Image 1 (spheres, chains in turn red, yellow):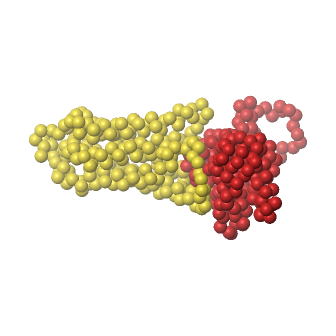
Image 2 (cartoon, rainbow over the protein chains, first blue to last red; image 1 turned 180 degrees about the vertical axis):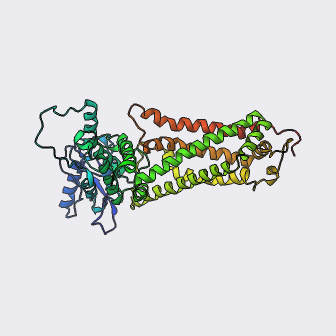
Length: 250
Length: 231
């Protein structure tokens, strides 16, 4: 396969970025998208040019490190698939592929296709934990949890924190991520205890990071590689309203 | 009351204000349509309804002040939400593909502002009597304000009828996203009912728009006639 790649190049956060066009020849349909970029980088290095910086780690679709907006869609055209699990057979010979970083105030540019997603870590630090003393590992089933509740908590916990929801959102809102992180704790008895404080703290931390306001486009749900549903956002909205009205403090 | 201002100024609090005032405005539309449909009952019934509204006196003014306040909060908070979103992505994508979101959802600010402009014209026409004072001054056989003839004469003017119909279609676009959106914002969501809740917007929009649009269409088709002896 031959592809024309339009790749966003940006030396650092303070410099203006621009698109560079590269011809990728000899692309195998069996390569992952990141392997295709590895080959591009090998060619760039051989020509003594700067390789394209991009984030990657596990390359198994479970760590949330890879990113990229490919032809206008976060993580590319395949549903429920991270960029590292996207294969070149999803493209046609001769295609032009536009590759951009996740763009959001909350995700400042670092270099080329790499952005700083540590805003997510700070949101988690504001309340995405439980502070009850759970003691040693309890006996199995000592604390009964209904199957439906456990499943819902696990569905939310599937979030890998990649930030595709922010990248895809026309408002650059982070509500799908934040609502998943709230839901995976609130559906379990240990996490339910601090639910109200958690919702308020995490929502305020999210606002403080400069993410936009959700206006219910649901683009986040459509691109989420872990298919986190927007019903968690509704739960968060309801939880925030209830906490604002009834929580004793903060 | 620090918690109140803090909660309402957060992104979710702001959205909640948009949603709650949105419910108020949809409620107003339902009431307004129910009143206007009485035009099909004839001049006497419609003028009795119009006069009855005016005779509410202070209560009418309280209702009017309430709906104006609701509308102002709706517009201000919605624009605030749109602005925060603009600030949240200073560098636009060269290519941004819409995977699922509808055109209606992306045009909420535009349709909303056009509806606002229409509402001001609509008030100038029927409530303040500024655009067609000669129609506004009419009285019926019982000496009441002849709202029925004012309506019929108004819609016999093609520009008035067309602008009304266009505005109602914009309103339909606005609320077909607005209603499911406000339900989601208020946390009314359940996997079982999600398809139903999402369809509620287009269904309510079609019903309301059909009701409103039927009135100028009926006037132009002569189904709602001008009473004899007027003008």
